[in-house]
Length: 237
Ligand code: TMP
Ligand code: ASP
Image 1 (cartoon, rainbow, N blue to C red):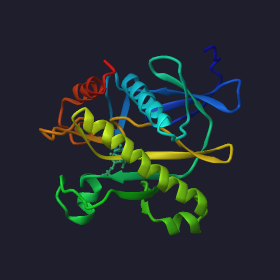
Image 2 (cartoon, rainbow, N blue to C red; image 1 turned 120 degrees about the vertical axis):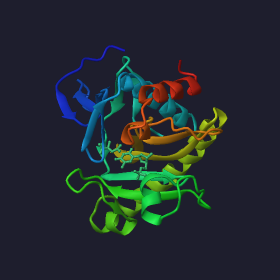
Image 3 (cartoon, rainbow, N blue to C red; image 1 turned 90 degrees about the horizontal axis):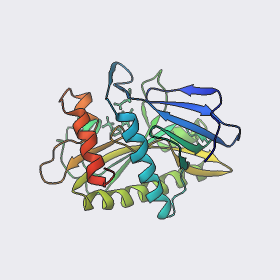
Image 4 (cartoon, protein in one colour; image 1 turned 90 degrees about the vertical axis):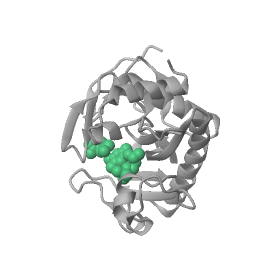
């Protein structure tokens, strides 16, 4: 596909976004930069941009096959993908199948506990405030999303969880939790952003070894190896 990359529109912690000649399409360019704790911790995970780009595109295409509309259009290169230009809903949606991370801290339940149902959480996207946890009332009352949009976001998030949980179980990986974001596109809510070891917790089903960004957040070493192992599990290398 012959797509001309135009001016940079935005640079985030892990990605850059560029305009194209088509006002409805933008190019996402994945970096190797890694941050944690709202940017307090900084580093590089060599090759991460390539892995996250390819893995996210693979998973988004899988979700499309299950009837979930995503921003994915076309992979342009190792690190760059053409996506629909959406208006991002300022909510981070987290789905949890296993207790870990901030849920463990907040509730005192040990990491590894299995809640009786998947848990959906909402966080308000604000670097300034450190992405605080909020609820549906906050989102409605402050106009971050309409009631209809919120219902759609919850429905899609649970469906994404069902599809991904089953897929990862098949390759020997527990999908512990993940974060997704949504955008508005031509009047619809669609899945945007990325799905990668940066935004998911992956544990080896047998050993419970961590195969995701927690290795970076928690200074465990073996970060690059874990990202590559996830690519192998998925069959992308
Ligand atoms: P948490 O346990 O720290 O709240 O994280 C839950 C999941 O969300 C985990 O898979 C990592 C992901 N996540 C992000 O992708 N971005 C973030 O800014 C945070 C805090 C978590
Ligand atoms: N990437 C996020 C940050 O820099 C958080 C994380 O993934 O832990 O704050």
